[in-house]
Amino acid sequence: MKKRRSRRKPIHFILGQDLQSDGHTRVTRGETYLVHGGTDRSHLETVDIVETFSKKLRQEGSPDFKIAVEILKDVLRKKGYDPVSRPDPKRG
Image (cartoon, rainbow, N blue to C red; front, side, top):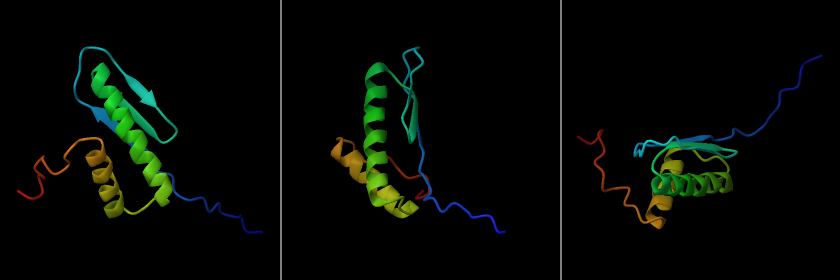
């Protein structure tokens, strides 16, 4: 008999790294994400962004990379960040 393969949808997992530091170690883990580092304020902001991004990805049904990037940009804009303000190293 052939073994049945599970046909589960791929699950996304997001790793957030906050590079700001005040000497404390902060780690927050959700079902589909892990956020490490940051000051008290920046860690909470990063967790909020990652949680929102994760929910949007789940609503879209694990979209491809290009769509995921657009979703992330939209989340950042809504949280008050300008995702275009930092130069893209690939653009030179």
